Length: 152
Image (tube, rainbow, N blue to C red; front, side, top):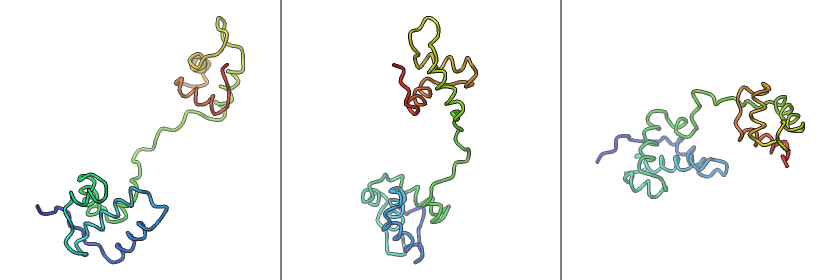
């Protein structure tokens, strides 16, 4: 079967790839992609099959295929870099002021009918008081752990 994506690297691209492979700081993902590109290079002779390259690099056949496809579509820089997110991640709802208000809440007396604060009680009270529009008990737990506050 003939390869759909033919890769012919220039001398500069080969040197750049070798520099990545010799670098200690390069991400393992990029090293694998760089190695795949070197093995797929038609300029260095007839490359092996994608299945053999996948076995030698410790990746799946699909990874070899997608790396070749990415190189043909995006070039070397597009293949050996992480993609930028199209939509930024959600911003954190925890701010220093909200942390302080949550700590003050925990240091105060527990609600009537309870002997101590629980994480669920803190979460419910924080929403009730308007400290947070919504908050999960796991977020409360991580904030308390960060502030080194014990509920015992």
